Structure formats: structure tokens, C-alpha cells
Length: 180
Image (cartoon, rainbow, N blue to C red; front, side):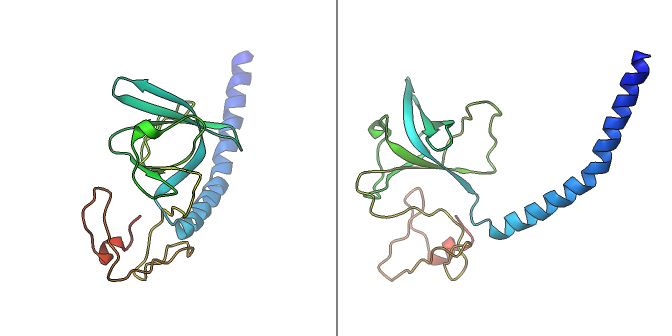
């Protein structure tokens, strides 16, 4: 009798799952389409305060907690992570990171991430917020008119504007089209 009950329950559960999946798929496709239309970047932004700095030989990682939602994330700081001071826009050294400092990390949303808690992901860019925040950081894709795809920023370049990529190499205006 128990086998019949278990089998019956399994068949009912499978039937419910099969009947509800087209509705769920339709909702998912609609959500994906609208997300793609407003998706202005391939990067995800995470902001918080450094609560811990772990140094193990040459390896450094920071633990960042978002005070608004108590989300904790571990960011390994490798030689490839670009560290920038928000007030001066100058690149900084990883030894300048301190507990209690507010930071914003940007990482590729397509990058594989371990499904552990707290999540551990290496950022491409870490903005260290200073007391003299003078500007803003915007990570977005730009069209041929140099307007971000979300329409919030237009780049106005002059002949004196120096364009460099992450490694410090000179680039052209057209190298910005469709890029983050």
C-alpha cells in the first residue's frame, strides 16, 4: 500500500510540474527579453564595506559586507584586478585596502561562480571610495554616439582626450563602440 501511495504522489507531482512548466517558461522568456533590452553592461556591481582582509603569502582577499542587506562576498584581489580610488581616479596598490573602507566591485556576470556561501568571485575592477569622492564610475556598453545603452551617460570626447584600455595601451574612439 505504501508503494502505491508513493508512486501515486510521484505521478501527481510530476504532472503538476509538467503542466506548470510552459507557464513558467513563458514568463522566463518574457523576463529574459526585457532584461536584454535594458541590459547596459556585462558586469554586475556589488557595493559594501571591507570587514576583513586575508593575506596568505602572495594571495590577498577581502571580505565585503553590504550593510543594507547583510550580503557577504569574498573578493580575491589578483594582479589582474584594477584598483581605483574614486576621489582621484588614480590606480592604487592592494596594500592600501583597509577594514571599514567602502568599495564597489565590478565583475563579469558570465564568469563562473562557485555555488557556496559566502560567494567568492574575482572582480575585474574594484573602486575604493575615498573621502573626496569627486566623480562617478559608470560601467556600461556604449553605442556609436557614445551614449550608454541605459541612456544615463554620454561621453563627450575632444582631440585632447586620452583613451587607454585596462593595460594602458592607447585605443581609438571606435574601440569604445559596443564595449563595456
